[in-house]
Length: 228
Image (cartoon, rainbow, N blue to C red; front, side):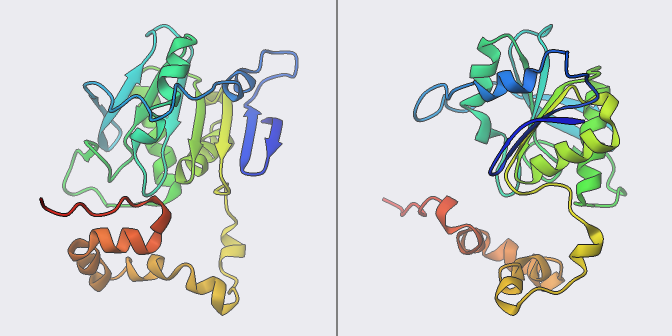
């Protein structure tokens, strides 16, 4: 995997390609927003069994176009790409935007399957979706957790990745470095990761979901509507 360009929070790379080959990730970098305010919700979603999941996803563009998988992060969903998808589709790309496990219409096929949110599990889900859709080497693009998922697929299955676009600081982390304590103020920023891992946290989030989302991501939560 050779990097083709990087800025703060943005990495584009070709996966398993020689420098003389075309670099579709550079084309992605030229795509502009489809317009202010977005394009509204996607049309009818599709559903497909892939690995341990039934994956819900949106699709745009010609079915024979160069495939692009757009991977969202937490606490976002596929609607983060309402501007990007039509722009790519207009350029001839086949755009696939899946709900990751735990989101939207994506469901586990079996009630007995272990519920696991590890980044490696999300990467396996992505490869399983590619297999189910018979997509061999798509361009992988993601942000936040989606960026990490795309990066893991590119690192572990480089033959399945045509190019990589990774946005935000969530890259592949070091498990060893993650065991090292941080200063108290830095540790405080991650309180919710520990709280939500407890039964009390699960019950608390179920009861106060909007308020927790506002507390964790205050700049991204719309104001609660008041009844007329």
